[in-house]
Length: 320
Image (cartoon, rainbow, N blue to C red; front, side):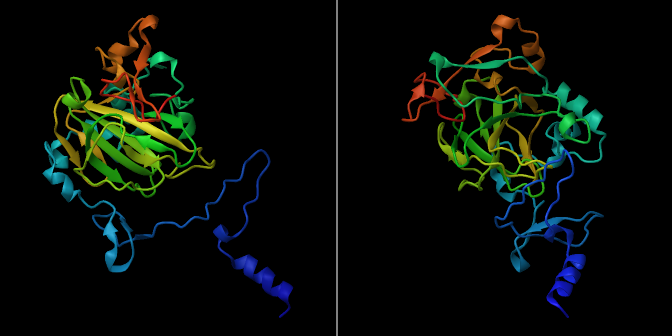
């Protein structure tokens, strides 16, 4: 057989993913990552659903394994003690109409408020880009959806800082999920000065940081590095932190290995987290007059000092 004949036959029967992408008119070809991919294999159906496993061989573990370390956290409750609405709110309840899910998420705080970050003393800080709080995301999904957080672009590898003192209550690889590598921290009212238990969510991290469930973190401590991990669509995402806040009047939470859900939790506009006075709920914030929409945001400087010095809340990136 001649070489050209062998090459033709090999190309004819090659898997599609081995063939070069060809752009159609007006379309961009998605980039293909050549970095190592974490080993993920499908295991036999259980309860009628295929489940993913991480690792290989005898070391593989269910991606949906319960968070046994979470059971020792103050206020931990089993997943069945958190209402379906709260699970729908955080986007982890399957089998529900997407339009109905959006309505529930709006009722639990995922509403545009009009708030704008105004950094103290006119500091230069990494800013939220066009991916603003609670904007309609239906144009980016094949279904009704909201952007439940804000995006702050930064160069790959830029350290992300804990916005307040707290405790790690969630860490997820999110294989096959748009969020990518994620860490979640719970902050007590005493740690933030707010009248709620708040939860800060950091996603698209570069790698899983060396923190464990139950670890205490200090305000300004590095909690991860910026990247764009997570399932992508046709286009390659820019490197950015997806940053979100959830709150509750009580300490109770659950973590089933897939998500953190505070008991009776609500979404909070991340800008509202920095307000010094109520209101904090999105419905009330949306009704504020225009002259009350600017929020004086405290921050950490590159040298580790805080502005103001007595703040208990800071922006997730240092400012100059």
